Image 1: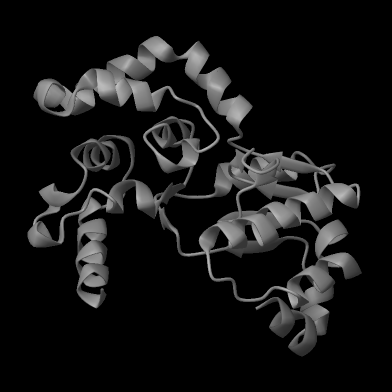
Image 2: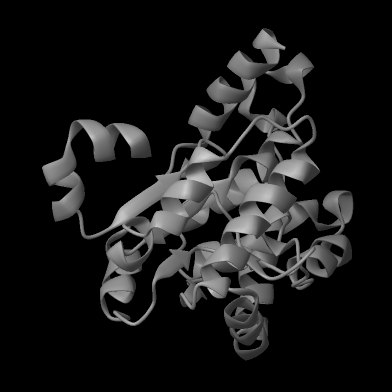
Length: 230
């Protein structure tokens, strides 16, 4: 995609003021207006991500990245992309290309920022814990005993390096994050019950119903389709 834009549409490339890299590891739950309003208000930042991570080294997670021209018009960025190759293991992909890209940007004095970074989410959690607990208890309702409210809260308030892959992502949704990592809900999907939306993780299905306008049935249909492919 990058090569196509740069080589086949050079004038469009020169006129581009933001370049977005996004992949299919997320469901889109809402609009990006507030995200890009925040991006536009921070012209000194060269690369934005939604979340960050400190495993291996500090980096922006690559499922959604926004680059300013100060990055995507640079030769070092072009060279990095041209040298991306197939890797056998996911860890190597993360280390070489996700972590590697952030390290390369930092090395070239580019400024990075995660809109829902670990510090941002932790501060939101600390300042709104009572409200979060109230909302969560309302969501799980009578299922507190079955699903274990304590277990949910343990993961909900665990703002670790991998906070974007477990229930703590709910805190991002409450702050207006328009994306949801697919793996959070799909790992709880049972192909044997694929025709029933209740086969989704109950907690996240209720979050979608109460906090977003996203149709949770879409996830059921998608999970059914990919389980059949497997």
